[in-house]
Length: 297
Image (tube, rainbow, N blue to C red; front, side, top):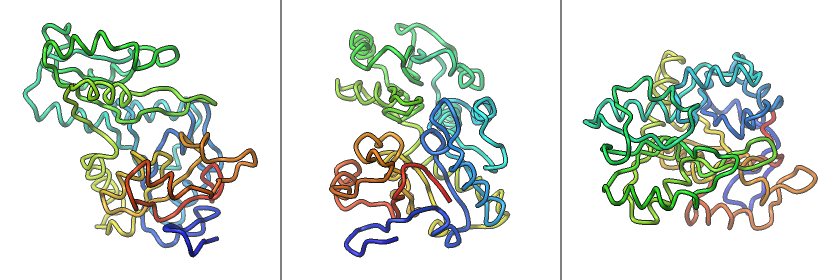
C-alpha cells in the first residue's frame, strides 16, 4: 500500500519490503515488547526474517550491558531465535568511560542499572567528590518526574559536573503507560545550562557498533542501504537511522501511539508528515511507515 503524495511509503507489514534488505536493526522496547510482555506479531516477523533472509541485531537504549538485556528478554518471554545479537547504549557508555580519564562518578539512576557499573573501572562517590554524573534514569520512574530533580541539578551545576546520559530515550512504554527515562533528565539538565554527553540512539557510536555486529554475523560487508532500521521513536530510532544513512521503518504504535493511532488500531494519516517533521526536523522522513500499530509480517 502506498500514497504517491507522501514523502514515505505506507506498508501493511514487514513482508512488503523484507526481501529488499540484507539485515535488520530493530529497536527493542516499543517494538519487541512494552516492558511487561512481548509483542507476538513483532517477534514472529523478526523470527521469520532471520530464518529466511538475514541477521537481526537488536539495538537498545537500555543503560545496561547487552548480556543483562538478554536476561530481561528471557524473563519477558521474548524468543531468543528472533535475534542474532544485542547492542545497547550501556555497551557504548562502557566503551566511552574506558577510553576516558574519569574514575569518580556519581550515579543517578535505579539499582537495576548497577550491572553497567560492575563492568567499569570507576569509583562510585558522592556529588562533592565526583568528576562526572552517570545518569541511567530516574530513581523511581513509577512516581517521579524530571521536575523532582531541580535541587540535585543545581548541586551538579555548583560542582560544574558533566552528565553522561546512558539512555537518550525521553520516555518508553511500560504496559499501557509512558515512563520517563534518563534522556528526560539530561534534557532538563541541559535546559538549566548543564553539559551532557549522550550514548545511544540517535548518536553515531551505537550505529557503528551495530554495523560491525551485523557484519560479524553476516560474514561479509553489507551496504548501509541494504540494512533496514525499525523503530517507534522518531527522535531516537528514525533520526538516528537518517543520520547513519540507513533506511528506516517507523512503527507508530509505541511512544507516539497516543497521538497517531486511532481506536481501530490503524495509523491516523492526517497530519502525519507534519508531525514527523516537527519531531525530527524539516523534511526528515523514514522510508516506510507501518499502517498498523505494531510490527507484523
